[in-house]
Length: 351
Ligand SMILES: [Zn+2]
Image 1 (cartoon, rainbow, N blue to C red):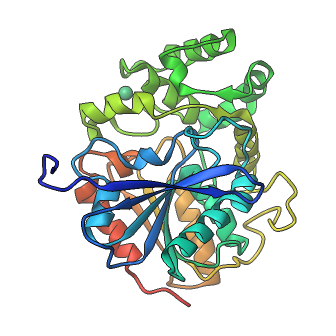
Image 2: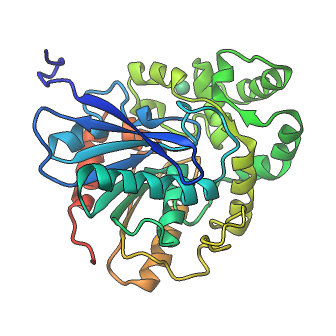
C-alpha cells in the first residue's frame, strides 16, 4: 500500500526509556522501506505538544524528508509531551533526566557513537542546557529552531509573564490551549475568555488559545498564510497541558535574557551564558523572521555568544516569511526549510 505520493507508509515503533529520575518517557522510531544510510537523528518537540508535532498532514514532513534522505529518525517524547501524564516539569528536569537518557537509548539501540539532534523551542532550550552542561557528549550537531540559550520575547509576552502569570498561578497549575474546545473549570473558562477576547484573526478556538498562551501575535506561532487548511484544523488536537512551573522558569529566563537553572541540580550551571560550553557540538540556529513567540534576536544573540568561543563553526539562519512552528509544518517548509536543515546536518563537525 502506498500514500497519495506513491510512498510506502513509514513504520513506527515506540521505544520506551526511563528518564534519570525514573519517569517513563519514549522514543518513536520511524523507519522507511530502505535501511538508513546515515546516522541517527533525534527530534525534540516543544512545550505542551508531543512527538507528533513533526508529522502534520502536509505532503512531506521533516520526518518524511529525513527518512527519504537516509537518516535514522527518532522522535523523543520527553516529560513535556502531552502523550505522557501532566506533570510540573521544568527545563532543568528535562536537561538532567530526559535528554541524556534519550540520547543514550538511541546510542544503545543503533550502535552509533554519534547522534544529531533537531530541537524545537522548549525542547531546544532544555536540550541546549544538556549540551552546554556536557550531559550529551554523543551529540555532534544540534539544529535548533526558535530559541536556545537567549530568551528574547515581545513586550506583550514580558507583560504576561511578569503581571498576568502570578494571577493565573493562584487559579491553576496548568494552562491548556485545548480549553478553546472544552474549558472544564472556572479558571479554564476565564483564561479561555481572555484568549478569545484578545485574538480575533481566526475562528479556530485552539489556534487563538495557542497564541494567547505562547506569544504576542494573532496568530503567534505561525503565519496563517503559511498553513494549509488541513494543518490548521489538525493543530486543534495537538496542543495540551503545560505547567505554570515551566512558565515561572521562563519568566526568570526572560528577565535575565538567557537560560537560568531553577532546581539547584549540581550538574547544571546557574547561568548558562556565564560558563564555557562543555560540548564540541556544532549549533545551527534557525529562527523565523516573523516569530512572535521568541523573537529572532534570541537565536542571533546565541550565535554571537557561541561564535566567541569557537569562531566560524556555528551558523544562524533567519527565515524570511516564517514564524515559529510553520518552520516545520508550513505548506512550503519542505521546499524552503528542510533542505537547509539537511545541509546543516551534513556539515563537518569537531570530534
Ligand atoms: Zn488560526
